Image (cartoon, rainbow, N blue to C red; front, side, top):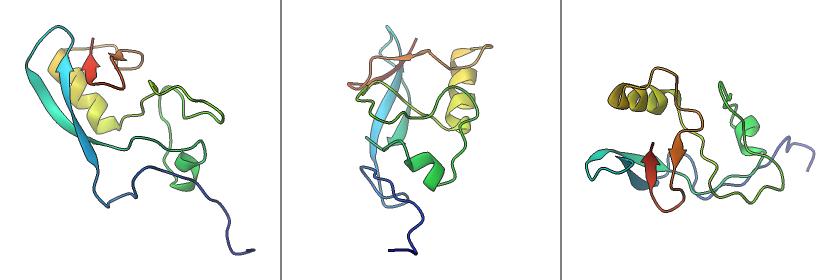
Length: 103
């Protein structure tokens, strides 16, 4: 099919609903906020959707690491403000895939 330029897979179509998870601070019971999430995408998804990675890494081909997470800049700002993190959020999110928890 010559008119197809790129393909990618994802668990949910964008803007077609999503699952959600609560975000907690590690060791505390209070829910900070709820997020909508996609469970999986392949390595070509970000480039196909023209989503730039501004910090950290995108998803890699042949990776089965289910603890990788990609968040929006809005999520990063909100989490940094709520937890008073001055040095950003990269490498601080843990306890995946069971629950999103911020250290």
